[in-house]
Length: 294
Ligand code: R5P
Image: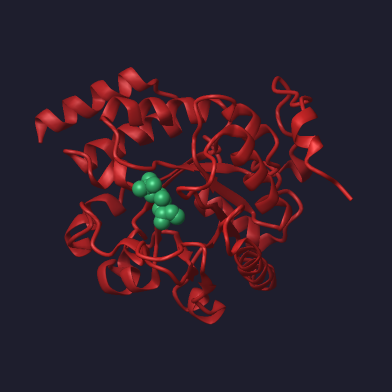
């Protein structure tokens, strides 16, 4: 049986060698899927840049009316058209997003506890029928590696991946962070790799300043980063640049966009890094110019 010594010893990351892409398909680790799965992944990830800008506004499922999302019907429409993917709950989608936007949706499917309780105590709450009814392009399942309800959250992911494989819908495995959980490269690579091995087609995790390139190198499927708590704009843009530079395939960002002084300008600045290779300073200049024009 494997033990944890492999983590201590692992060092062969081959960081200079790009991932092997099976079957000529542009997305890392995704060449073996059927047409429908690839079609949905191609709606999420831009073939030209290989990356995606997902707008996360599912925070209410544990936090209630978060700052910046008090009125989703007002906050999200100006941003929705600029995002590649909307990541949200089914309640937010039906109540606040016009179906005419025709945007790929990544549907949050796990939930169960509020910020007042143990967050890892989740269940699968959204049936695959409703995911399909809402024309979702992906499903998000949160997994709490190292938490009290770790095994249950892994079972949740397995159920979602099984349902997704049946209908060709990719699963975004989300590595949870919590007060007791690590946020360093060792923890994030353990969690991200586990989610990919369980069959998640792409993984959302957090950026870490030390060793993030090892997190992306050792995860066989694309990684997108969450933004985390609101940072000064330059720090959020630097995090975004560094993550892409170190192998991330995009962002699934919420608070650093919708809590910015000018959310539309921030989303455009993030896009310029993710899709156009802008650096953080130029993206900040873009942000300030757009903000001052508004
Ligand atoms: C995590 O799964 C949350 O529900 C959010 O989707 C995620 O944290 C991304 O949002 P933020 O960039 O605000 O961290």
